[in-house]
Image (cartoon, rainbow, N blue to C red; front, side):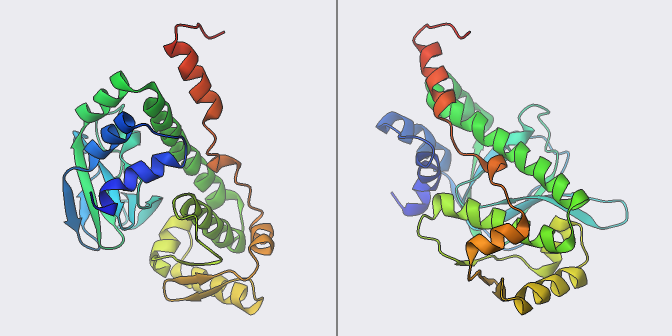
Length: 256
């Protein structure tokens, strides 16, 4: 099996240990790899949510188009992410999703998730935790746009990306790739591209962050996190208590 076929398995293993059956259930979601190009649409807003996808390689983003022709980017998806979890209830895609880079996706029907729900309480728990984390990211994005300065917005977002990448790339250092153009960053943060450029220049002059094309260098991560006033509480990855509750319920012990 290729490394990309195990991307989702690696992602889940960050949260909990998996047995062979659980790994196979997840691997089944990545059985139909499809190469996708930079800027390729994965789906559009309001289309039926008959399928979801695993982002096996590359980066993607979700967005809403405005009446004036602009867009608001809502989330950035990284390798190993399940894209479309938030669309399960309305059964229609609430946002459009497009690729930020070349990559590989694996589409799968919603019935595949039903197999997981009925077979593995552990995987179901992690899935709901991941869906909750995506909602928490959306809430933090709202705070970032409305209540932080441009300097804090940029720094906070960079910290979030660094932390999210570190969960599935344990060898990540203070240098990492961020394949986002200034316009994409502007559409994420609710700023103009000029304002984003100016903010990066200010951070560079202070020796806090260096950006060369898609390469980020943060010499002092602790100092940079302080500048961003960054708290990682909304990115909590602890599912231990939920898994314990799931195990008790599965053993017939009522929750109180």
